[in-house]
Image (cartoon, rainbow, N blue to C red; front, side, top):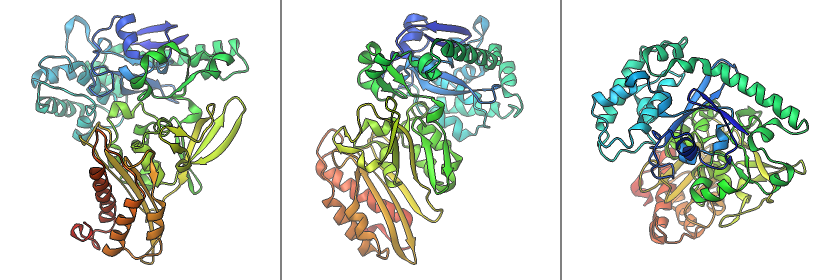
Length: 494
């Protein structure tokens, strides 16, 4: 039995955990303000807010998510908000809606609800906003009518209003100003009570099992053995939503033991269910990789980053998975666990891929955590990506590079490349060539030539063989130009 709050109502449902939140709110609760658009997470018309109770038990953190790719089971224990849940009584507009109307930000109106929900989520963010973060909050919403400038003006006008939001008890101020209804202030207590009741019933029903697996997945041992493991849903719910609805699923999103980013000695460790947005916001990672937020802005959009997990990107095994390419260059390894046998083992990420969509793991093994050597502040790291659109698109070719240089000589190198082979690639021969050499135009040109011998691209909808070879050469050159701008010139490398 799934239990969560939908707007101001407690929901108990036995609908399949692998079905979509979008279908539940529209067809089972008849809340049709949430629109059906692309069903691939691109358009943002189905955007809702999902709130999670924080460890202090006093606050709820809200994130925008595309409900077309949100497994219904991932709503368990949380607060789901649709546009009907923020609308004021007697047809009064919220400040977000008023700003859009005032600036002419709505024409056909189909996409408007998604923008409203994303901007409401921005208003609820506990961190003080800026014009840049306000605009970034709508990066997952597409409008085909307005040309966006009116929506940008509305967003900036709204952010100006939010400068008056107090740092203490901001939710009370937001409710007073009409950004959200007053019932929001009672949600933390309701989620606390719901969690306590859920855990009590789970322990009573199955004292030997983990309460999360009982209450969220609802699987017995036989069902668990044939269940589809499901994280954020951003890939599987695009590929085969109907099958997921009809089969048992084991939900991993939000499990406490698979979350968090921390430093342990000389290693960085993150839970397998860590989301791309959590990577972007991590102070631990930004301390060592200050440009990481810039790279992750190239990975999908805010609502998708709020949902998509790191391990999900790895296991999807796409040859152009952005997070996969990034973590390959960081030298990441996986901790795999067989839950049935209670056995764990370590596997370098580069050894996970045997062939196209073929993995070096047993069917019952799951990724528990990811770890990689903590980069030194003096190390060089960069990520590059080329796609048809700059944002919210799959790469044609992507690449990452990590270098350590001491005494003017390259001491260690890791180079990764995506879109130029059947699997996410490391370029070991190119890396070996660079070790022990001084950085010069001649050295880099030699590396660029050798890299061409390590790849085997094919022509497809994202480019011809020749185009992909050219792209990788340019991306590898871009790494070195970024690292050593005083020593290298683009004209010397091409």
